[in-house]
Image (cartoon, rainbow, N blue to C red; front, side, top):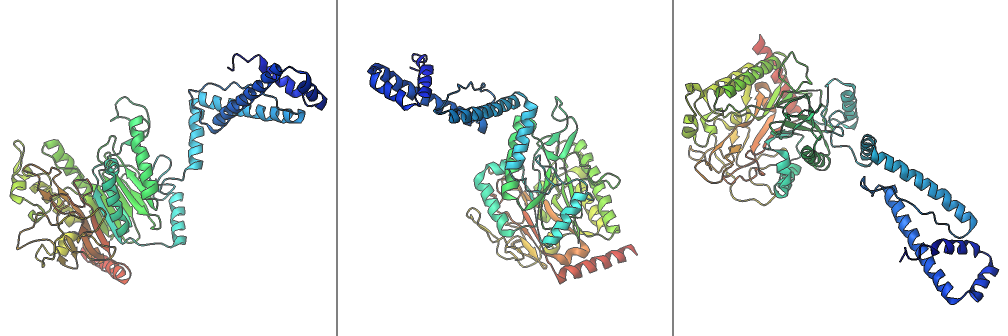
Length: 550
């Protein structure tokens, strides 16, 4: 219809412009034939329709609704009634046309478009839940611990009122994005997290790839920024967006510190409340290396607080071959040197994470089976399930001795000889606490150790497989290994700092993986005492170190 009557539209517009004078309007209505009036009425309606279409297109272009695939909008200049109105409309239309042209040019130039989108994102969206040095638009961790930004952040924390670390949680997540995609389990974890109100969270095996700084064909090669999450391709962008949501929504009160591998393997994330000052951050165990240099697989994050150092590690699995044996040996050697250095400096240490070591047979659900497992002909010291071989236990005891460290859970448990309390069994509702859970500062029943007693550790001398005394459980719910478990996630503490430790709680229980939230590991919680008890513990630690060095 528009094409058939297109020739009438200009005449209608001229007629409207001419019809300002009343005498002409009167002449038209009295002397023009009826068929011309019908045409005039139809043309006027079409003009209004065109005006609406063009106005809608202008609005879409201005708001950026039309994408790069859209062509430039060809506008037909429609003249409204009245000379002044026509002039105003002309100026407005010229302004709109100029803005649309600039928009199309920006869309044609991908570099300009990316910069424009970046600025728009930074203006419209709040920054991720981390400090300025801990996380930018690409989720980067804080850099040097002694940078000006870190000091400025620390000063701000002092103004707001500094807080002490009282609750620390460690959890091997076995992929943070996979955990997040299971909404029921993630919501249950967040409910638990919100109840205990942890000050520090140490996540191992987050499985996020580090940002590549140059384009390479092989994703495993090339220089990386291990403190930033990769977002340079479609696959990595999905994980990047998930991580952004997690930091902005669930952990918005925390600073985030990443240490990542080249691919979706290994990697760590440490979250620290914003009001807790951090003196320094380190990403390796080599004393002669730059603190900002990351472990190549993201296995080390060290945070220095006012009263102690927190070392979070994802210790390499010992495996069943000589290559992995050597990798584990080198890692343990570096650990031994590092903890010995801290001890000589008189510093307190809390070492946590997935340490991949069950120090004693009491930490195994099936000691005999675990201890005789092997693949191929290997020396006797390497016989056994990775995590409980003689080789690993010997090195672990050497680390404890070098740093004057103790296994806080076992220390409070009294080697399992304490009186047994009620173990937490049975199904819990999503997000509800079981007997093994506690609020901050409270002791728990079942699988928690405090003040020299450990509940749920043994039943008539033999552990119950369903008690929450193991941190790792076989992920298979069927087969001969379905009910096997180990305690390999720990809080290792300086001996002189032990009076500060109120309790250590193993959150998960049961062969059905209650409170594991989809992972094969469960969270472990450390509660610290504060106030005068903490001060007395610090003085005791210094005295102990002096005696050891003399």
